[in-house]
Image 1 (cartoon, rainbow, N blue to C red):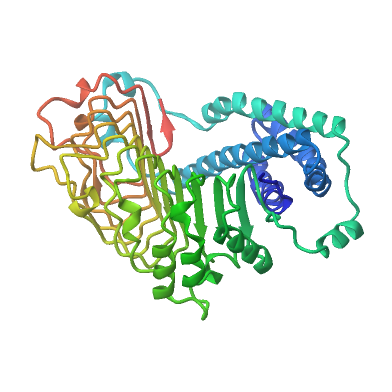
Image 2: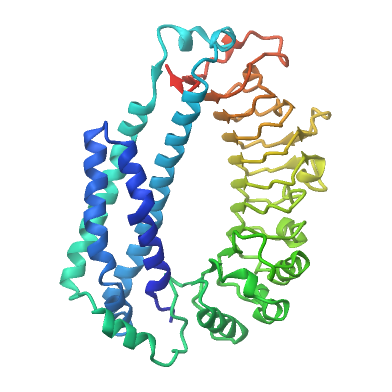
Length: 456
């Protein structure tokens, strides 16, 4: 049986109650409905957080409390996602202000007349309006959790009692288990307990494994990683591996981190994989193994030393791929598509490249017109890749949404995307049509346009 501990939840709620919600509140002061919803979140969350210690104790004998903690975990991640949307919108507005002097004439010549008639209007208000249903749904769930908290008899444990509880002998179950998941936030004893648990056959019921924080992955050695035998843990469907963001720590060794990652080969049933702040120069080959038939989400975040992306084109069910903060990537070539390029990225729907400061070339491998690549791609985002030179892949028949920010040297041909519905471009010098003889006005599917953060 997997128990739910308050360590990871408490840390996440602290983050939400701190800078994340405050930043969002500052951003939406001009929109009364949105502001009131966020204020209500901020008033309810502290009361919920205050009872986490009591809930952790009580869940062992009360299934209702365990379900309450599970629902709170789900809600916390949904709140985090929504606050990320506000942060992203705020970033786009800031980029707009820096680009306010850029002309729109080059873009207008290339857009259907349906999208250029009339004046451009700021999209910020429309964005905030679109968020209201999501906010109200979260508020309703928060109020529901608050009501259930009272009916379950959960109350705040005084700090003295909490300190006493922490001094008790360590239980067999890890103290930071969340919804069948193990999340370790950098405390050495807890991490050791998790590793010991994985080395035994008592880890059934763990479906999400996260090793995160300042004391996280960099304190896992090669022997520990091998003895964990993650490839035998078929119940784990989400794996999060996060090293410290301090790449200059003297205890960190790039070669050791590569060996640790190699040894943490998960089960073929894995569905989601996140690797963050990895210090090695290359990713493990198992990441691109096509036998990961269930892998649908892959995120490679702030792996500053990696020089290339893994050849993941043959992952059959991969739907979402995010790359962010890989400073040493200069070129994405044909190896990215994998050995068999006839149907690369068959299921991929969302592709995001963010903050790749030295990425200069994307070799799209489009010489063979019979070869289908990205046949299911619906959304493409390229954000803050200032050195990227040349043009995007042209045969993206399913692409519906294209967003490009701060990629000054990039050439974009929207007539190459016959299904395009949404276009947003900020910080690019020009938009041209070089790849098609058909006039761009024939892109009849295009419904909304944002240039220098303005929208029809």
